[in-house]
Amino acid sequence: MFKIGEFSKLTQVSIRMLRYYDEVGLLKPEQVDPFTGYRLYSVEQIPVLNKIVFLRDVGFNISEIAVVMSKWNDAFVTEQLEQKSREIEQNIQEEQQRLAKIKLAKADINRDKIQIHYNVSIKDIPSYQVVSIRRVIPDYYGEGQLWKELSAFAEERQLVISNNTFSIYHDTEYKETEVDVEVCAQTTSVGESEGDFAFRMTEPVPYMASTMVYGEFTNIAKAYLAFANWLSEHNQYEMAGGSRQIVHRGPWNEENPEKYLTEIQVALKKRDMSS
Image (cartoon, rainbow, N blue to C red):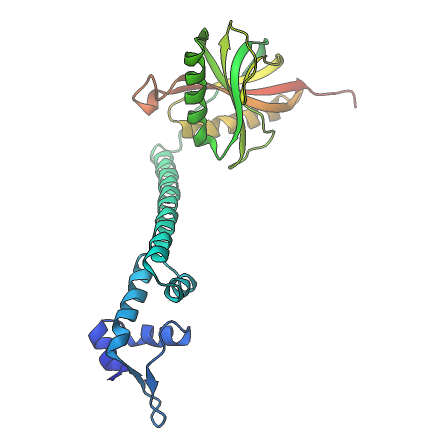
């Protein structure tokens, strides 16, 4: 049997952590001297402690470690490690997004906060004959998959579609998840709807506010702020539903993100000024 100091030395785990694992029930001493109160550990407990330390080092918290230790077998441990791996990958993506935002903020500061000016104009958008696919997707990054599916659908059925394509965001509010998106391609073809795919005429929009966004897609948020400022100055208009997006230059035809060109459109209506 080893005293706690000896066990700490042999396992390279601090006395503080050994006491903590005792308190939370992860690793109780093999014995506690009834006269001195000293914690005593056995050599058989070293592999158990090694498992605890391993799980801690790969990101498991105390409650998760307790579950894994209580059900330890190869299949269960493998499943838990795969799940933890997915969690870590998700966290890495979120941290990368935060880093990107920090870099953008630093760039703004380094440029003495020079602001891009977005010119807002009003368009009368007619109805278009389109083939489209509409679906609620996990987030905006899933839009690329919709375009792939629409392209495959058109190719399989030998549809004649133009390069005039656009996305319609049907949500009237900004949503980070479960986004209602429809991607559309103008076509002269008419057919029967199949599943998520539809042949339809889009709704005309007599008052569509439009602005061009140059550069990376992260600039789009600033364009919406420009719309907010524009609406505050033109109070004869108010928002009327969803928005559209047309990517004139994007990853498929432009390697440099700084040269992307995206048109943002927001449907408006004339405000009732009589009251």
